[in-house]
Amino acid sequence: MKKFEEKTTKTTPIYDGKIVKLQVDDVTLPNGNVAKREIIKHPGAVAVIAVTDDGKLVLVEQYRKALERSIIEIPAGKLEPGEEPIVTARRELEEETGYGAQSFTYLQAFATSPGFADEIIHLFVAKDLYKIENKAELDEDEFVELLEVSLEEAGQMVADERIYDAKTAFAVLWLAVQ
Image 1 (tube, rainbow, N blue to C red):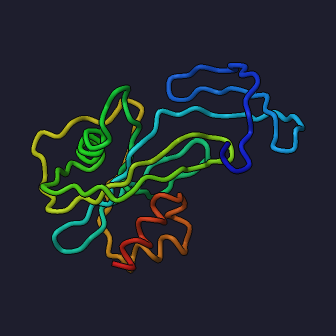
Image 2 (image 1 turned 90 degrees about the horizontal axis):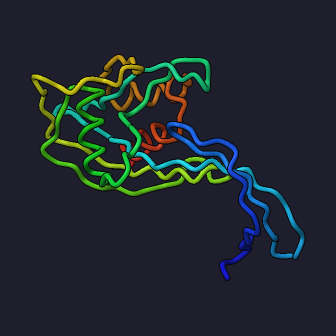
């Protein structure tokens, strides 16, 4: 048994959408009591810390409906069924920024919101960037603006809450300690 493990006794599917599924699990707690857990199932994602030859961090600004605002983020996207994270990383970097990279290094994976979701993001560092002449198109419901900023500028964006998501704040912190 895993420390503090909660044993699922029943799963009730609530919603099966294009990106996420929602379920309610009945669980038995370590002390024998029972509880309900609302869980979002997500296929996982990748995010890319893309750095230009002159040390600029490649970012995109886009509107996030859940927050009702635009935020500035590192390029990222959802894993497709059966797709390896490196394939997703290459595709998302190209689609969102028009860049390809000679070098992709896997950094780590982490949970985004473990209190209610199983989403894992695989984080890559992309270097030796090059512009792609005929880049892949964005998804039809995706609108982004490309930014290239210094580490200092990115740090100010975190302070100003223009960078507001954990994966991008993590990327800025990671770059700062390199």
